[in-house]
Amino acid sequence: MYLIVIAWMYVVLMMSVAEATSSTGTLLGALVTFILYGVGPLALVMYLLGAPARSKAIKQRNALALAALKAPASASDVDTSQQAASVEPDAGGHAPGGALDGGVAPVRKEP
Image (cartoon, rainbow, N blue to C red; front, top):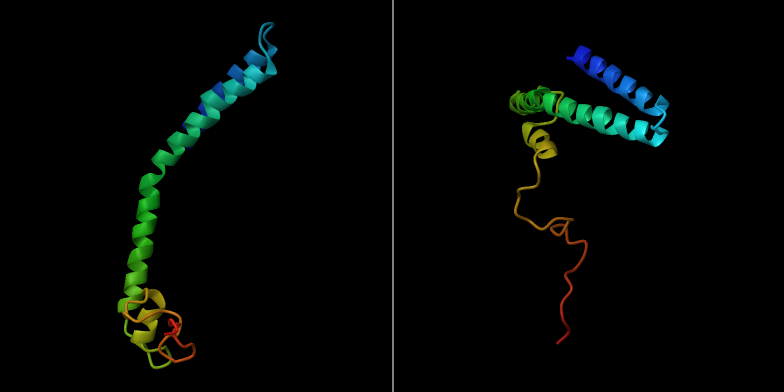
């Protein structure tokens, strides 16, 4: 796959050189040719062709995280509820920010 990319960039570079050295060509035209025929399309194609590898890596990372959650904790590790709490978002149903410890009183209107 990279051989095609290198070959296409060589062709585009030669097109840009021909544009720059032509009697009617300009350096700006050569730069636009290089960007619009070379860098832009190749960046898009490489991004689209890399999508399966990225999704495979994401699935593998999620599978490893799930396996780590399901693995039994040893005596030296923290218990499974603390381990799950460190990975999972808060689903307790209580207000966040220590509202249960009584540190800050709720604000009410004066009668």
